[in-house]
Image (cartoon, rainbow, N blue to C red; front, top):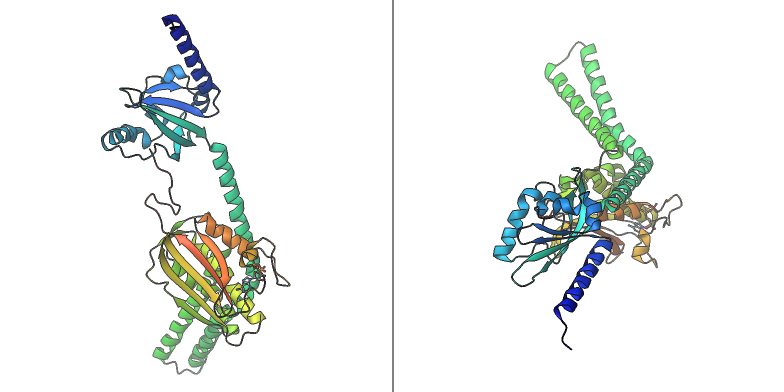
Length: 392
Ligand code: ADP
């Protein structure tokens, strides 16, 4: 039996109602737009997320829901897509920003699909408000940074003895030169040139002492986490300077290779130095603990192209890990030291991962331990992580 028009109409209405019900019960905001960016539909969740009633936005340009610079650029994106058909967001989920009716900007996860009914072009945007998730991520990162700071302050106990010793050298030299000057002046035979040279030495040694204090203060300061373009080679040098005393006291031979001329990376310098201090100090402790006759610490950096970044290896010729699987060392509270906290490596790994990198360990050949870290080169959109924020 043929359906009459009324049946078809009733079915159509039913289908439309069902479609509307699905849209309106969806948890995600669903917005459809035409090829010019005009809003065709706006479901309940979208109303809740953006604070607009559907009637207020239907027929208006979708860029209304975006902050700058996307707002001004969106028509251009659509135009580019029409002419090049190059998909920048269609079919791919992205984290972008939305703008509510009250003007607040908030993070959203956006997935865009394309529907092509005959003669038309319709895009569907699925939108999830991820403000809470972002806030939780921020909070987790803040705690992680606090933990890293606590670990630095804690490790200061061990480092302080070495640094105090380091400080003693310039101070002793200053005293020596000052006494010599006083003697010359006292004897009434002050040779001005000799005096000048001694004063110069005093100034130089004073600067050296100030440098040691500066390094120490900077290391334990609780600064804002700040990733800036930074030279990994300089971070290696700073970390080794912090450990100068331990290195000298145990006659550790240090070799550094490949750290010059590396491209800058986006780093929180202090945290990266903290990682390097930790790895190098663990190595020195392992070698001296096992009374290795000729302890050697090697830091080797190289560019890696798959994936694009810099790899740095810290190797020693200590006792290695025995039967322990290398990855176990990174578990919080894993320690084989009497006074150990077992936090160092787990914090190091978290720092490196927060930089978008990786940290792992393996036995060194022919002997000892090797820790490798890999850090990404900054991407074009300005962060160290692949695929950062970007607009459709
Ligand atoms: P802690 O130094 O407080 O023990 P870490 O997390 O820094 O904490 O290190 C955990 C454990 O990993 C150490 O106790 C040690 O057993 C092992 N380890 C770390 N570095 C080395 C190394 N270079 N050689 C051998 N063992 C190491």
